[in-house]
Image (tube, rainbow, N blue to C red; front, side, top):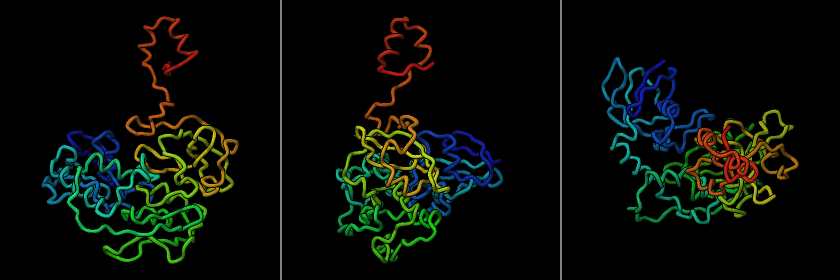
Length: 335
């Protein structure tokens, strides 16, 4: 075990843990952002530089600071390490530069992008970006292409995080897309259109942090904050499929099906294309209940998940008030 101090908070984590995952054990606003790192996928991290932190003390044996900022997603902890993230102005200034770099070619088409409202780049730019840009050159653009019967690629939005490549490489039997070209000519693509049809290929949509890979069955159907996400499951015929999903409702219609994500936007249990694209009837699923949405998300604007009243407050309520709330609840009573 190794003891590290992260933004003044001391925590003990197993040896080999990355700085980012150590910060996630603490949680809250001090956790560095991550645009390319994805815990379930091997080999991710170290590409976007969004999670750079300052190591002001390398370890108890060697307390010298590391000369440069390091990516927290691929840097492992050492006993006695001292890390600065939100408390270091250099880190915050560099993070603004990272946002500016990611937005150099990224189009500002949030009003028409299906990813709006659940976009990691939107959140990253809002929290760490600048209101203006210094970039004056022409942005590179690409035509939208269908890389599969259910998946459309809008390469203009891609930030080359490589998540979709690792997903296809590790979940499907044969990866048929990847990074073509190098440098400023690099792009995600295939040599043959409409070739991505493996049974788990739809998961590349869930791992994409921006709106570069979108679900063709959901495109332009509805804004995500006007939908109601509900947890559901089914006994899938595919043994590799978890069958645990989120159904996104508009009224009684299921507009799309996605895998479940944790608080850091990462899928822990993958689903197959049959569950994702072909099972869009409520009768196909066993409904578990509303999906928990963080209050900071615009999706919570539905207010369908009722806030819980503290039990101490309930104890001071008259019985008639409690009875009225239970019969017609504007909120949920915690027991």
